[in-house]
View (tube, rainbow, N blue to C red):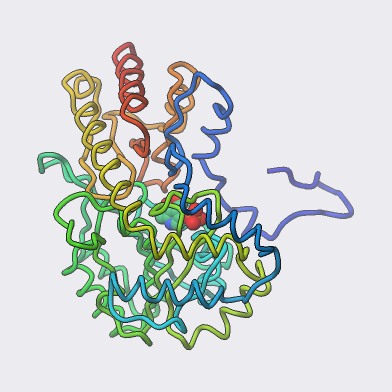
Length: 407
Ligand SMILES: Cc1ncc(COP(=O)(O)O)c(C=O)c1O
């Protein structure tokens, strides 16, 4: 952090809340290796494939038709309607009046924080967690209290699991919000329906907001493959007007990370405030991007199915490799995630995942994300995004094995 030298007559510094934000350690590792052709990048949560053609064609057609102007604050009516129909198909009936389109999932999270958090508010989050979710509330001056998942090594294979009683105990009267990302980045942990019921009942009783980040809801691999595979969501249980907010994104389900398009579903009573906030943040999401979004939502089920099949095979390959005798002997303890696109594995005895990840980049050409990027509870673990082709994953596993075995 560059701060004005002591004694300067004109200190040019950000607010203290901004000064104390933690910089992303995922970026710190990636900055050390980005652009190097010899590094295999598994550090970010994005696929190694471009967005499907049908979606790109829709954006091109919209641009050619002259869609280059400002649009509605809350999103194009056509996209809000498509998203309400999509949500109604996956969850309970939803109305376009509950849907706001945002310029990315992370922008939706920032808007929710601006909408709901006052300085000093207590926000309880299940961790390890994607760093943006931990830092955004702090920008508004809220305090984030962590309830950690545990890697249950008594199970075969080990699994990340939630101590529900501990979470309920942390949700004391006066808590402003529960912040929950399921399926979870980085662990792949997925909340059960019963846990959701108990949490919702508790939060209802105490007037606590439930903020559910649902960006990975479609990327589920086991036991949930119905006609429309989707992880359990609070939107399956809540009434339209209660204190539940679901944020979502086009990035993961339809391979659109660079497009910066997301949405949220909220009680309609929040829309007036939300419209003002969107006006003063971004004013609107780009029209031609939203046109492509309509096509993704309405015609994208085949893309989701193909993506899930690809990631399931990738998860199986990586899990098998990380559980091999050679990597077990090197201290690797790998769970088998049910969902999302990450394998968050421990290395026994490892205390400094950031330094290990930097060395893996420099010495093995392997780009992974340090567990400590996801809060102190993530230390000792490493996140591997497996949204990649089998040959790259196998090559990466070879590199990890060679590096750890030689230590
Ligand atoms: C848990 C979680 N929420 C939200 C997002 C935001 O997605 P985007 O801003 O690309 O829409 C991500 C991206 O990695 C994520 O992992």
